[in-house]
Image (cartoon, rainbow, N blue to C red; front, top):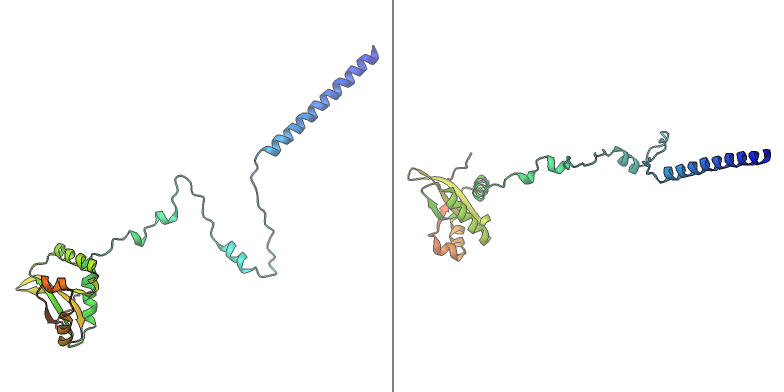
Length: 195
């Protein structure tokens, strides 16, 4: 009887130890399966030697924070030059006219296509848009002028060294301009540059 009790006690003790060992193994498996954050360790740099260029570049680069649902990339948070409105065609040609006048010589001439006795930017913008479609926008100059006491514009075509060259240039005007307007040579040597 004593030996039976002794064997039962040994069996209980061994069974308990096996269940604890099985639980420990199970816990180890759970720990092994659980994701752990990966930590990358880098050895301390040897300061006695200069660092290679690639290391210097890699370490001097700023680390950008992760983009969350509330963050925006840097390019979307700062205003960019692309968001600025482009100047109108009229503004572009007025600037080009000022540049042309600043470089003129005393005999400079052009071809006057037409003039307006009223400043009507919308109509001029429409004309310049058609000139752009014809591929002739770079040849058009818009000169603010006072005509009969009213503010208006002279619309010129081309930049010529003298009046004779402007007369020759009239023969080479696009057919549309020859029929729609009454082109005449125009001396631009006396025109004023806008401030």
